Amino acid sequence: MIKAKLEVCNDFYVNSKPIKIVSGAIHYFRVDPSNWQDRLEKIKAMGCNTVETCVAWNIHEPKKGEYQFSGSADLIRFIELAQQLNLYIILRPSPYICAEWEFGGLPAWLLKDSNMKVRSCYRPFLEHVRSYYETLIPRIIPYQINNGGPIILIQVENEYGYYSNDKTYLSTLADMMEELGITVPLVTSDSTRASILQAGSIPDKALPTVNCGANLKQRLDALKAIISNRPLMCMEFWVGWFNVWGGEHQVRSLPDLNQDLKDMLEIGHINIYMAHGGTNFGFMNGANYYEQVVDGYITETYAPATTSYDYGAPISEAGELTENFHTFKQTIESVTGRKNQLPFDYDQVKRKNLGEWSVSEKVSLFQVIDDLSHPVYDKHPLTMEYLDQAYGYILYRSELSEQSGRQTIKLLDTNDRAQVFLNEKHLFTAYRETFKMKQTLSLSDTSTDQLDILVENMGRANFGPYLNEQRKGINKGVMLDEHFHTGWGHYPLPLTNLDVLDFNKGYRKGQPAFYKIIFNVDQVSDTYLTLPGWGKGCVFLNQFNLGRFWKEGPQHSLYVPASKLITGENQLIIFETEGEVAETIQFISDPIIDEKL
Image 1 (tube, rainbow, N blue to C red):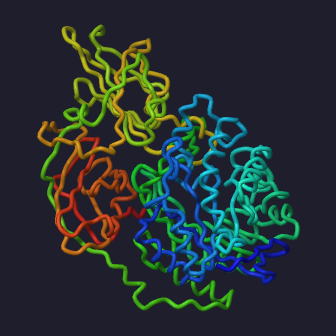
Image 2: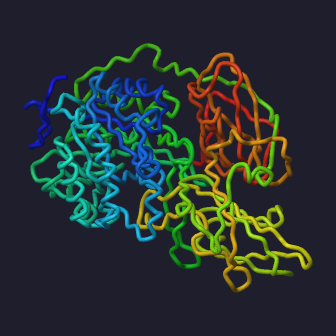
Image 3: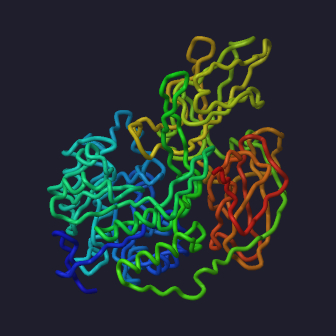
């Protein structure tokens, strides 16, 4: 490896020679490792000389003190693949990444501390960050450009000006990084709006950059004012947008995007966000809060992101080269003068229709709850975080032996979606605004009633002022009539042990349940799973969590990488929560998404 030096003066220089950074964003943790090289080769073919990736803390330290850097978390392998392709790297390992990723990349276990204040100088938070960095940073030190590696820039924090203006916190992070061995230039990224850019920047320690998706050339005045005579960079040039469940599919104008790309390339440096979006496999989608006016009042509606993070990227979720790709390629070549050849077969992404397959076995959740989970008892409802659970579902159970007749019920401060069952019969579902409504229970006069509340964590917020309020499950309590009800059993359901399912234990229509499908594959290939007639839930293929589905759309298919299939017999397990099911599923060659334009 040849050591080099990146300098930030009036421009970026490597060994005193100016470079134009043309970067494409790929999040290694959103892409199956078998596809890393393919996606990296494609962004290089589009004209990028750099790849940008965030580093998701919750991937690398899923439990306090337990680190993982293998499989989809093998950051070093991703870095080395990029280096083999002569791509520079912009690394964004700030504790918080946003990125529409679960909790903005922060680990859920932080919230077990009831006083936690993330993204601040709260001492326990900084101590957790330091412990994480003491494990992460030594791994990346050898890959800095001045040590012969490809990393040219490292980000301190992401869009901090949207959250706070605590410069002490930002400086503490920057100092921590340098103390632990970071020697390449540091950056921050914020809005083009002057107040936000000022709040989130530490120009004396890190180069400010901006995130923006439209009219870039006209929106750089605030950045120019704060960086003096240093290079202009758009750290996130938004070429698309993410989808949320129940929302409209997001599409952006290619001519407008292309003009912004050309403008930015001519005056500065750019990172295309996303070059390849990938997939929120498992339960790792984030969520946002959107303002809306209800009865004359401004309210904020919780909006979880879909499983697909395609983002309108020039390289699609399955690796296809879109119209955006070819247009961007021509524009990059016209500005930089660099020609990049595509292998003849790169447009030929192999995806197969694997046919329709039938459900072979099924079992209700209530029949196997004691196999999947061991209850924890407490007078008051406990959150997932208190029970050391990060993702999935949690079932709250209580025996109502002293109440009778009609009772009102209200769930207070519950995240994110709750289904209420009385004697295993579904009564109602509370979600978003309906949590504010009282419902009615009709209790028995002569026997004990069993109350079950199944709560789904649909994704912790990744942006905005509510990061410290993302504890999942029931936070305050359950009110029956006018009092808090006590006496609860808690069944954590992260669904990481589905191998214990006994499909002989019984099934009742209309309940949350598990469904098994056995299917055969002659030759593995990328494909899409679609579930027409199914309601809501998640899907496990050969024990790998493909992600969530919901009839609400706009996403109606799940991307299946070829590496998750086996030649021969495969097993699919579907957990469906609404009691809305069909007898079959289908594997198709093209994604299905609502187009509401």
